[in-house]
Every structure is written in C-alpha cells, then in structure tokens.
Image 1 (tube, one colour):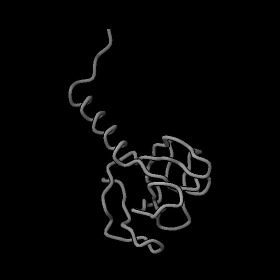
Image 2 (image 1 turned 90 degrees about the horizontal axis):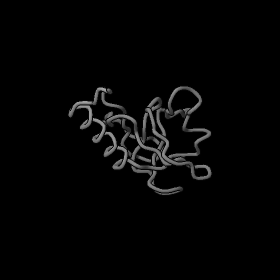
Image 3 (image 1 turned 180 degrees about the vertical axis):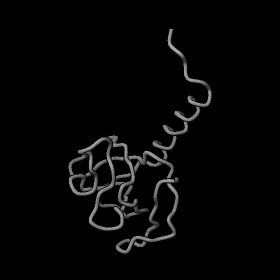
Image 4 (image 1 turned 120 degrees about the vertical axis):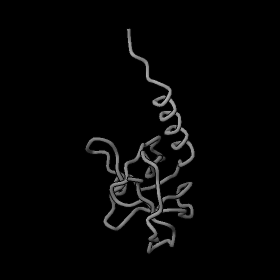
Length: 107
C-alpha cells in the first residue's frame, strides 16, 4: 500500500504546473545561458541576468537573475523553451541591455 499525497501536496503540484504553463518563455542560446550540467538547470550568464523572450529573436519581456532554477521544456536549435522552477518576484532592478524587469525566485 502506498501513502497518497494529501490535498495540500496535490494543490502545490497543480499550482507549480500552472506556473510552468503561464511562464513559458524562450531564452538562449542555451549553451551560454542555460546550464544543465549539474543537478537541474539554471540561468548562467556573464552578467546580472539573462533576457527572456516569448519567441526566438523576439522582444525581451523580462530578465532572470543568475542562478534562477529552470525547467527546460524543449530545445529549439539555439533556444530553450523554459519555465521558472520557482515563483518569480521582481528585484526592483532592470536589465541594462533591454530595459525589462529583472526577476528572481521568491525566498
């Protein structure tokens, strides 16, 4: 007999899946901005954060700080379709290159 997850656990799982669906975005190129070499995937750039787009070469709509955990949903040539693996919150800072809000994980 297996112990089943309670309603709270099920709700948390559903909320996380909903977050993934709501925050689908493209960042790239993955070789430079998405690090999946260790456990899990993370934003890794030689700057404060990586700009995030809704489609390849599109307008950036937000930036994610270095170390933001990601779920890679799909690789598309030089781009990765990703979702944040946490609840994102604004840092109050803006991307220097694109002028979009810089977000981080809620702690």
